[in-house]
Amino acid sequence: MMAVRLKELPRRRYGQPGNAACPGCPETMGLRYLKMALGDDAVLVVPASCISVIQGIYPRSGINFPILNTVFAAAASTAAGMSAGFRLRGMDNVKVVVYAGDGGTADIGLQAISGAAERNDDILYICVDNEAYMNTGIQRSSATPYGAWTTTTVTGKTEQKKNVPLILISHGVPYVATASVGYPLDFIEKVRKASQIKGFKYIHLLAPCPIGWRFDPSLTAKMAQLAVKTGFFPLYEYYKGKLTISPPSRPFRDPKRRTPLIEYLKLQGRYRHILNDPNALKRIEEYIDEQWRWLNLLESTNGH
Ligand SMILES: Cc1ncc(C[n+]2csc(CCOP(=O)(O)OP(=O)(O)O)c2C)c(N)n1
Ligand code: SF4
Ligand SMILES: [Mg+2]
Image (cartoon, rainbow, N blue to C red; front, top):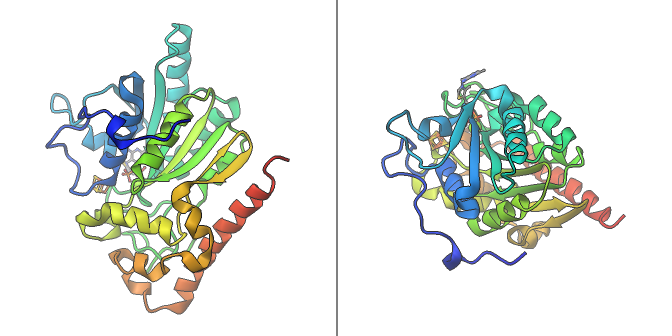
């Protein structure tokens, strides 16, 4: 697969000015990159989330491409049915893509995702992970990281973030990847690659939300890069049973080259209460180590 080059990407505007997103919204960034990657042959399935508001209420829609809203628990199965319908009509060119939040993915939609993955339904599922239920006022999800403030974890979440990509890898699906809105070309490349593969594909897209994470809206891209540079959110892909660490994350396999974790945490108001708590910081470091241990383990089985 050829590397994506910025100047080759379409200039068409898929998100309309004046949509309902907050300034610095990472979900609209992801949506824009997704459409740049796939163009007009993609239809989206969206369960309840910020995107269902951003898309707008008829006749004042904020986006100009086909999108089907569905209930939380059924996004993957809705998409699977649509995909089967398109295939039956011989419309193999139409890509059916789910664009769902972390609440809709890691919690409420997980059983439908597991079913579609096990059946290897021909869909691309993208989880846009802003690490909480943002649309309804910042409640914790199972993808909220340890220590983070939300309106339902006012002294900080006491559990670690659920690792959904690993759950999908264990389903044996053809393609699983992580991406970050801070590295658009890497994300676009992964979307394009996934869209060429038949069967169930999953991309977990980190999407730092200025409202829920409590940072300045000008810093969304920087935050999404710091998550990678600290080793907190490694970028990788798992394809045909082989794990590859993606180029933006490669320097940070080595813990000594990583940006100190505190540089990431101190910019986010949701971690304010733990910045001087060595035990809490240690638990986040442990989470990072644990993730890299899994990746090293998977990589050690490449080619076996
Ligand atoms: C069954 C059901 N429960 C609750 C809601 C209310 N609700 C709408 S959006 C939302 C938050 C979704 O969170 P997430 O999936 O992380 O997406 P985000 O809002 O962060 O984009 C909730 C709880 C709903 N629409 N349906
Ligand atoms: S709350 Fe966050 S994810 Fe939702 S629209 Fe605002 S910036 Fe975007
Ligand atoms: Mg969310």
